Length: 220
Length: 263
Image (cartoon, rainbow over all chains, first blue to last red):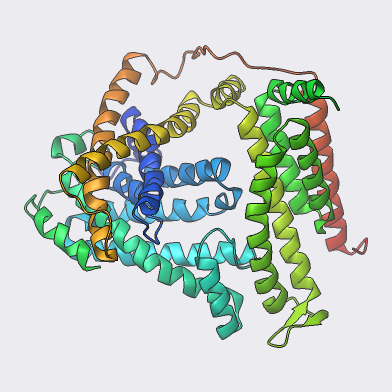
């Protein structure tokens, strides 16, 4: 894709029928992460894996839409608390998409950059929403308990919400990014070539890296 | 009310136009949010309970509302009531912190708004076929692609759950450890999630080809739908009442902010 394309053209290129079909599946992957966590009794969400994979395949705006739809779905089916957090998911999708476009998903240090960026974006935006929309807690997970403990210690609602969000996100997003990276490495190149991000990936990290990865995620 | 009449009411809720129901839920929630005190939200919750009872859904509805409402109320009352910077008037002394009236009111406001949305969406989901809602929205001008996204997202989740169950059985049969320490459970995520995602992505390819051969990507033509959309005489009054309530709540909020009336 040349530099001369306008933003609108780029957007159109991202939203092909193929990308469009990918979105519901990525939403499904996001939601199945939660199912998996309850199955394995892990205290995590893993609800951004699909968004991250789409960010690699189809680019930032498709990833943003995936995040938005995930939260709309959760809001309607599970709990309307999830609606305002759609902004968080959109921002995470955009961040991951632009970083993936910069090629960071092809190097291990790049993956760490993605992890930290996504964690920060997620924690800051989620903390702002939790504080200003809900007044500090949503009561749907254990984080609210941690927040309550922080409030007693720090005497400041926003700071407490941010502290509990960053602890939770460092772990959760770390594992999500690792899973997404492992999957991105396993996706056949032929499959990637149909999507908007094709050609951006110079396939320098070859498939052998995979075997190390299965060990490295256990170290977390 | 007799048993039969209750059944008829449930049918009545089911027969409403899906878009009207969606609009009513959103407007009522927005009204509860805009009104400058939790009173309206509380009234709307009572109304929702009455509607649920008349549709024979009281037990699951009450379970949902209480199950979500109690913990979030306690949490918010604690955080906002004791530590909100807006607190000026203190109504109780808990020893380690003082309970402020302003924080309590804003916590209650958040809780009732959330409960109105939660209850509204629950009643809507239970009495609406999503395909009908999407078909109705599409005929009212929603792009078919957006409609597809919503419907496919809803359908894909149970499908992936089934796939996940199959893969789990396969992996456990070849010795995957799903119990044990946190690390070994974390290790199990890749062999479980990997195949689900990979096979879903392969699916995506086939799906997009099928859709394109069926002319889904054409924008100029009208897409036909097999779904019959319900309309009821009560649609219009319900939406009108919801709009009126929202407008009045908003007006009261603005008037209160401008200092015209005291709340």
